[in-house]
Length: 235
Figure 1 (tube, rainbow, N blue to C red):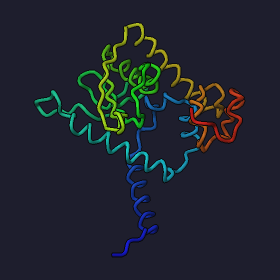
Figure 2 (cartoon, rainbow, N blue to C red):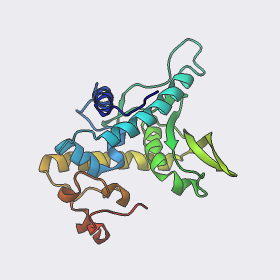
Figure 3 (cartoon, one colour):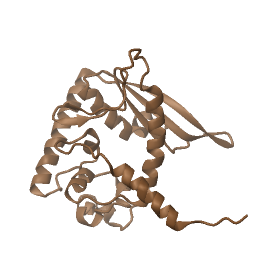
Figure 4 (cartoon, helix red, strand yellow):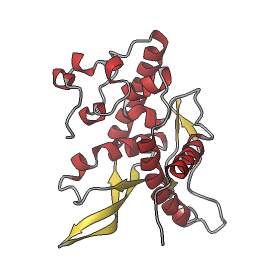
């Protein structure tokens, strides 16, 4: 038996994956909830779009596989008539939003490579909750659901996959504040894209600077001197 790598086929496979991931782009006449999470990144994606890298394609493939499987399994839950509760693009407060599931309140599905559940859920799931909060605000829902698929939680001497579901409740005041936040960020993005100036937009988390293709153009160190390094250490 002879076995050897076939780089030329690997290249074709990756190109096929990229073509699939890039098909059917989202509507671009308005911002999406995901655009509001990291405004500076969204600005650069709109002003200076970059081709997907091989590494990004592989990360997306892994994430979408888990995500798609969970949506497919749960999409008809509590819908005896066959109406699906997954996918779909909706509009509210001048933006588009696409919760992973509507049960009937919004659910957000995430895949985590962390080996431990965070002790402080609010801090550990900050990025997840930031997105879910916007869905709750758009759907005017006090309830939200966060479904986290841990790929390998530490369990003694081994790591095992696990599904954890978290109920998230927002007050009326918190939802109103989030609606105001949505409008503020989307307005700031509109203004920045029109003027070609990004300085007024919130910085992304420091770890995102590490492999950012717009690092030199963005110049994040002007707002945070610690980011002057060519490579920002992982947080």
